[in-house]
Length: 268
Length: 297
Image (cartoon, rainbow over all chains, first blue to last red):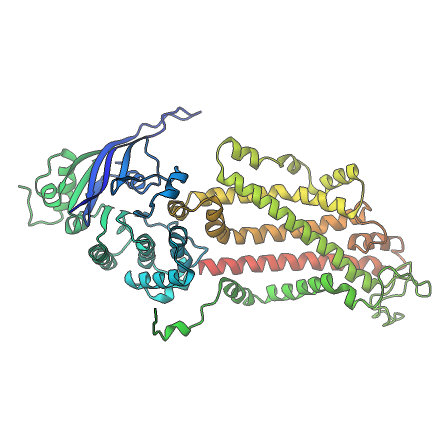
């Protein structure tokens, strides 16, 4: 396996500037070092407010880090703040699926137009080619080609999640980052989505980094687990190692709370 | 790539067709639309359909009552005014002047207001604030008063009153657009567009504008009725359109001189203004609920 994503010394400091009638917030993320191999699945777990979502946004380039670099295939990956640098670079290497909410899909335009955007901006395909590619991708994520003309309000939550997935994989990325992709889905749709992502990962050789509170899924699909607390990586390693021999207090708590649901298993 | 699909033949209505489907379901809105279309028709084709020249005076036919009155005549459908001009032709031309100029005023105000508002919404900090409050001083005074002040400085006339009303309408558009763009820019789908490399213009055109149409329709309809009322008010006060120009407010003011003798000279232009504003409000409301249905149902 070859390394495709290398993160070193990634740091984010909440702006410590004191504002009028407002105390400065104290939250710092990092420094974070992590490597992602080709085709690997990495889960980020941790409590709320441990900086997971922020880390995901920084990896995707939505938030500018205060220090540290992200390199994708040995080349620096720029955040949205660096418009001119991004124009020359390949910005479709890392794609993000946002946390599912009513705001993750534009209600005013059809699914086809939503999916057309990344291609229109980042490829030289003609309109007909783009439409064909979009139709193929819709089928790939388990929707129908007719969904091209649908609007957000006509789709269920699971279908909306599939559209977000389609949008993420359209420009053929190397790394897919997802912020709680399974949170809003019921168990059957969740399993379908998990299987879908696993299949796509196998087909496209994607590396998949995801945040989840569902340790069952984490244990099922992740190759490696990163445990975060208060903006720091407190433990990371192979999934089975983390689940069987957790070292850190916080990890032990998380794993215990998960395993107390499965009576036949005990911590060794 | 060849494909065989039976389902591709199914018709997928475009956004405008869907809006029309939703709009059609409201009968009141359809009546309003028919009325509005009539005014639009007058505005465009008045010279072709008017029976008389609106300014030609006929001393043989002074103050003839409208055709439905006992001593009226069918040759002058709405009767004539004190100078013997055909009121029906004058009202048709009045629709052209009042409705046409109002539409122009609103379109200009909307273009300027939405541009400044969008820039203000996308910028942040002091620059955004400066853009946002650029024309706020105008909001301290009622629109009609601003119009009177501007007309007082520049002199009376239809074009001057148009400038005045345009200026008075812009701040509302700025504020509404700015707050809308502000709230929209925070949403996740805008963030994913920017992650795709969309610049401000592309984000605005492809992501924000499709959602903003509902707000624009509501504000545009409101502004259009305000503009019609203001233009006819200024015409009535003899500050806007000047004497021979057939403008509804000016026609109404001219009718006032012979008010007791010929009440139809006041009533008919008044009813026209009323119907114009009413139809715009109804159509604006219907269009808004149709657009909302399209996106939410």
